[in-house]
Amino acid sequence: MGDKIVSETNQPAGDTTGDVALPVIDHWLGDTRWPGTGERCGDVFDPARGVVAARVRLASTADVDTAVASARRAHGAWSRTSLSKRSTVLFAFREALKRRADDLAMVISDQHGKVRSDAAGELQRGIEVVEFACGIPSMLAGAHTEGASTDIDVTTIRQSVGVTVGITPFNFPAMVPLWMCPVAIACGNAFILKPSERDPGASMILAECWAEAGLPEGVFTVLHGAADVVNALLHHPGVDAVSFVGSTPIARHVYETASVTGMRVQALGGAKNHMIVLPDADMDAAADAAVNAGYGSAGERCMAISVVVAVDPVGDDLVEAIAERTRGIVIGPGSDEASEMGPLVTAMHRDRVRGYIDAAEADGATLVVDGRSCEVSGSPDGYWLGPTLIDDVAAHMSVYTDEVFGPVLCIVRAPSYEAAIELVNTNRYGNGVAIFTRDGGAARRFTAEVEAGMVGVNVAIPVPVAYHSFGGWGESLFGDTHIYGPEGVAFYTRNKVVTTRWADPSTRGTDLGFPTNS
Image (cartoon, rainbow, N blue to C red):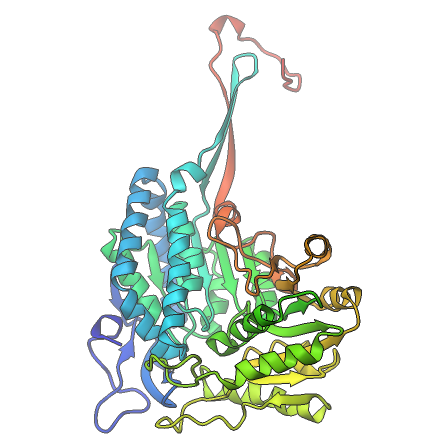
């Protein structure tokens, strides 16, 4: 992982390799690594080898107080920093990320398990949000009305919210923090990142990049921890806003807990993304897209396609095309350039996903490609689960109703377009959805009728570009705003309306009537 992302002390904690103590990953406070006062550490695994590769310090409640106090002190000066200076820091941060791109891809691959090319792609999408945030001066331009009333001008300005918190998931340890912190910081806020404790290394490289870019100390903080740290942040009176990406139950908890205290909240939850394939679609293109979107990053993506809805009569041909491609996927460690799909993040998560395959088989679904017996030469203890294709899935099966979050692609047969869209719209999630067709009229009708926040037409993973905003409907989003893009700027700022009069002294006088415009 490199010395820059771990504690110099290398204190013994948990598993060791021979007599060598495992590296310990610290927090980030001010402008340096910080051990905090917490006495607990968590395991950080190498999923390809199935071993504990590092330990991460878990914060105490006192550490949360320290981090918030530091952020509050930093916010005052940073919020008064000129937009030109903020933009300069953002540009420098972008360059620092590009210099450290190989380091980030390596640590993501080592701790999460995704292949290096996928890790590099994750970082690039995050950098696109940084580039969007570099244009903050134009995005914070207010509105001005001269002469709204006699000798009265009205101006609307946008100001920072204060101390903002980002709680991010394991599946995108660089990209999702980069959905949040560049926009929050560009808007003048201080930002505390609570990354997943499963793969915390990338967050420390982000912190170093912010420091290299000249961001004042205290504006960006990294605090590692589990549920107790999350709850401490959600209840903390010094926190003004929280952004979350993760599962729906936790997203609901974050929203309900933090909003009661008066915090601003955007909480993005789970997904069950459908891909409808109409009879007129290009079958090869649809099969390629289903495999890429279903099995990329071992299915551990909130925008992964997990259900392909085959509209009669294309089902048999489509399943055959997907199965042929699925059987050819190369499984292996992310460090191997030949690998197309890596392991799952932990043994517990692998076993959970495997349980859904077991249940689908017991429920009468057809296992076309069964990945449960996957083995990788040279890595017998890795958390391997091969890509799995399941046909004849029904809407009552747990493999359909739940977010599986693994390399499991379900095929549901539908007799018509109307039945397919009803299936999508009655699902409790509304994150992303796609349709594959050559019919422009059908595509236009679909985009109008489907109930989801992000829609793809012949695009299986319709993640918006950085200057739009990412977010779902239904139980995929709790809160009013989507993340990054224009809605991100709105979330991380507050409107202030200033009404100004510079009147002639001769017009002064007492008038107790309600003021009117004239």
